[in-house]
Amino acid sequence: MSLALIVLAAGKGTRMASDLPKVLHSIAGAPMLVHALRAGAALEPERICVVTGHGAEAVEGAAAEYDPAITAVRQETQLGTAHAVAQARSALAGHGGDAIVLYGDTPFITPETLRRMIDARSNADLVVLGFEAADPGRYGRLVMAGEALERIVEFKDASDEERSINFCNSGVISAESATLFDLIDAVGNDNAAGEYYLTDIIGIARARGLTATAICCDEAETLGVNSRAELAAAEALFQDRARRTAFEDGVTLSAPGSVYFAYDTVIGRDALIEQNVVFGPGVTVESGARIRAFSHLEGCHVSRGAIVGPYARLRPGAELAEDVRVGNFVEIKNAVLDTGAKVNHLSYVGDADLGAKCNVGAGTVTCNYDGARKHRTAIGAGAFIGSGTMLVAPVDVGAEAMIASGSVITQDVPEGALALGRAHQVNKSGLGKKLMDMFRSIKSQKTEEAV
Ligand code: UD1
Ligand code: MG
Image (cartoon, rainbow, N blue to C red; front, side, top):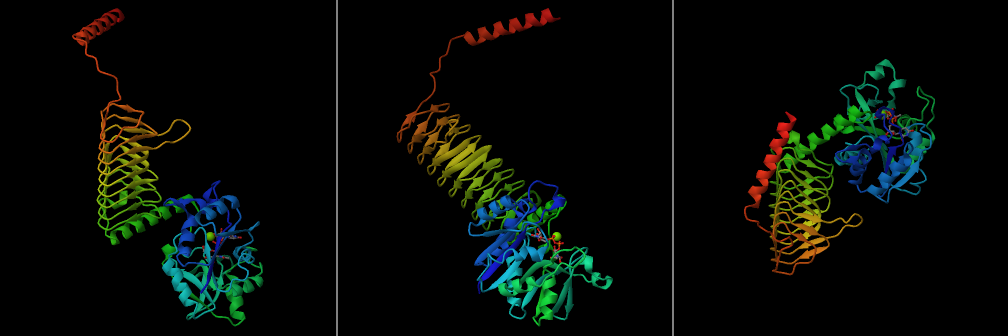
């Protein structure tokens, strides 16, 4: 069955007190909007339509970055959720299948829940996602008659009796596209808020002899974000879930509360993640790798058997093959480290290719930036780079070559060669002590004058 997603993201989010549109605030390294889109994308929709309004350009940019095939439609004034969905009509013209309406500020709906909604559609024309609210507050209430959903009443319009219902509307709704737009045509705004309520389509559908039902999900899934405090709570919830998922996947976390995941972190079975490790977006860590304490990783891949850290930083484009070692105070960026390569201490490796089993000594720097352009460094398999070497890129060091420590390497080093790129050392007999005695005597004279 062909599916269309309609994601509402036009609202202002006043309570965020922000210049950034609400749906672009991030949880675990991705805008809330992207979380909602990812949940929907798991259903392989044929079309995705995002309704934008406040901060439309920025929201449309984020949507296009996530998936260039997304259609954005503008809702110039926010007249209510039914009005928002109506804006998607032309974008979904001719769509024969079902539509699911999601909110851009509700990031935690799971694909499983959406699949249950699709299944429930075989028994009802409209399916609404509800939840049993611990505190139903101002949510819309679902008025049920057995399995059938009679109507949804907004808090502002509800009687006391209706307000005592705990089964609430998440906002997620699904129906055949054509039916959805038909029903929306009949929605008015004669209500307490003077808005076009999407929720009204249930009552209208029932009056027309159509059927509706609600399925229930965990309240945590429907959590919406309206303020900075709720954003922080959503982040914490995400992290809790990610840690539990890691355990279920067979990952050891030495101190789970101190490890922070991104929305897309992938970690293999029997990997070990020590204390205070932070994952930015785009990280995969293979089975059996070890990420030691206080390391920061983003946009990188760590293969089986590799050991990273403590105190390592892997930046985008860092590709570590099996059994690589990246030690303390080492930064790797846009660099490929082949099997068994070692960079163990205090080094910067950027825009580089390191061959298998090469050894990069402490304090080595690939000088990749000339102030305007970036250049690459290549180090061949089995090469040995002495401590304190400056590799001024672009430069190639051949396989099995050796570089004397303290060298500044500005020319390619042939395979197997020894490169010495430093000034000759000169020793002057007795002069060290003589100079030191002189300096000390000057210093003590000055101290006496000061007294
Ligand atoms: C809505 C539901 C309510 C439900 C609650 C769940 C209606 C009438 N009410 O209420 O039953 O319990 O969500 O959180 O649907 N939006 C637009 N354009 C608009 C209005 C809203 O794009 O003109 C977007 C908002 O950005 C937001 C979503 O739709 O993402 C929901 O809007 P919001 O104003 O938060 O609706 P609620 O009053 O919370
Ligand atoms: Mg709301």
